Image 1 (cartoon, rainbow, N blue to C red):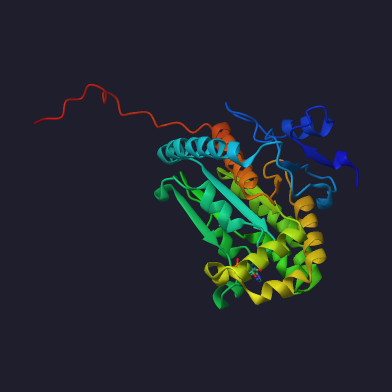
Image 2: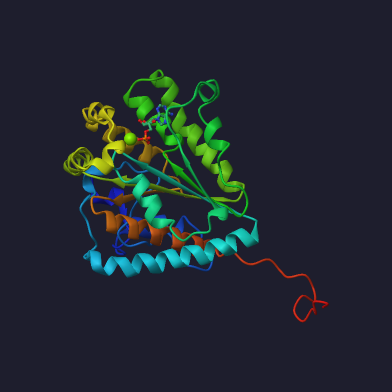
Length: 301
Ligand code: AMP
Ligand code: MG
């Protein structure tokens, strides 16, 4: 697989960068595709996850990342207030990763300080009996963010082409049809005013081993340890193949996938926070017009 198949936002000389950049229409702010460090999957091109260095740190160090994360969080908080006040559009942030990949930690770090009234996080587990009685998108659609809201999916509709594929939970023609169904679903959401940001937190197999061992060695982390994760780990290669195909098939101009080098938690958090802040900036939400004559109105005593 050639490097041309991946868009590295930091490499401005790569023709594919311009191509992908042109496919989005930034309004006002920075182009969300031009986020240094993130690897954005170019729509319509085959893509190889093994080409992405999970240990990348962008040449930064952890000490410098702290203030940079705080700055990005402050931008998110300020823009979220505008989004909420504007009450016209919404942002959906999707997180996918292998077990221990850092979805929970990223959500905790990135959304700290955001007004909880304007942000909802939805984790998706094994479907309930009622959910399983419906089409696969039903439970996700019910949780998409309404006007003014930021919605965060901790796992998502992509599980239905990931775990479902790896564990053979439905016949192949059924999950194969879902890539197009997911693209149609996301296109419909986009057309309805929802901006979609999709992050794949990419860790190495060695890093997963360390994180599982840390869960075993630390009593406060025991609750997070699930022996089933060891069984899933045996399917590491099948999961990587399933992730690669989902990222390739479902990276669209409106809703591209962003691969986040995620072995270093502080770098992962910074990249995701910046991407969210940049995306909100590009959306450029505005406070609504005040009613005529508000300024100068005298409140009677
Ligand atoms: P966790 O996120 O660690 O609490 O685990 C949630 C579990 O639910 C994971 O093992 C997922 O693979 C599983 N899961 C999530 N969505 C689905 C789905 N649509 N079908 C089957 N299993 C799922
Ligand atoms: Mg788990």
